[in-house]
Length: 465
Image 1 (cartoon, rainbow, N blue to C red):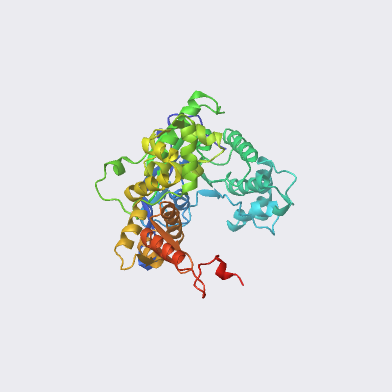
Image 2: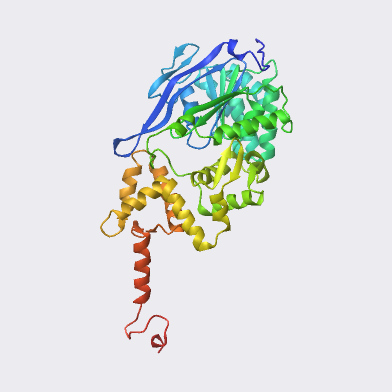
């Protein structure tokens, strides 16, 4: 078997296995509207390298990986395998999934042989190759075990064996360690790197989807950072650290900071855009008011500034846990971001130190100024006859740009923010939004007239027999 040189450097001169050429992907949404998931993405995967696709939820990284595998056809652009455009499943790749995706009624060996069986490989060769793959990934002795008898880490090893037994040119992995506990995931990453460095590793390149920054730095030769709504390439950062890599080294930590800055930073085009912002182009980050308050409190306690990677590590958070809160705080002007550093603004300090009534007023003014969906709801209610609107009105607007699930999520966030700022209320029983002033007046009226038949307000002596 040919030995693949896997040391960092000179990657551009190596043979290209897969090319993604100006790929865009949109899915049909409600009322015939298209939802754009990927926009004009171009990248290459070359022999002898590991590429990490790093991005938060909604960046389309899994859709991109499935497009590379030929499981999803692009709306525009194309994917080429060794120079030939894909017209179906990519013949040169195999996939490892987050969910293991094993057939529970088959033994470990039978699960590993599945792809070979589909390819028409003879039973004798299937057995030989499957047993070799099982031995390589450390499951020798478990050939006749069933998935239910295995731990999560062992089941994922079966997933690796099932992919590697095909001897693919490129191994595609979709967050393969995220369903595992921390120690098991770390052990598997280390073993994967050991296998990758061996001469008999049966694949020439790896492409891994992840939202874990440290995982990307630990594994990859290049990290492609994806932005969201729709997914697009924000940055491509080389990782020129010899393996094995020390997480505590200054170089490793500097790269983590650089990737964090790339994920949290706004696109240059977005900074320079002059078009008005709206709820379809600027979604609300998935952050509750309570979560925002917690983040602002922590930054306040850190003397008004914090290093985001250090904070995430201190709190045992992944990037997807912390970034929505950071995005929301930045959207409302409570935090300023400079690279991987977050600084508490005067507005953030005022909000944290204010009493409850003043904090609600400050939040309301910030949400109206900077949160497009909150502003849209308030303006629509102000223009209605009686300060009320059914939620179907906002569902129809949002589903021109979002899936039904994301539409519901956006409205839930807006309701949380609007209620806290007393900008509007929401009656979940009949699905009605009510303008804040109208809700307050209605509440006062009901309190004043909450009397029983004898004319006494509820709770006064007239209620008693």
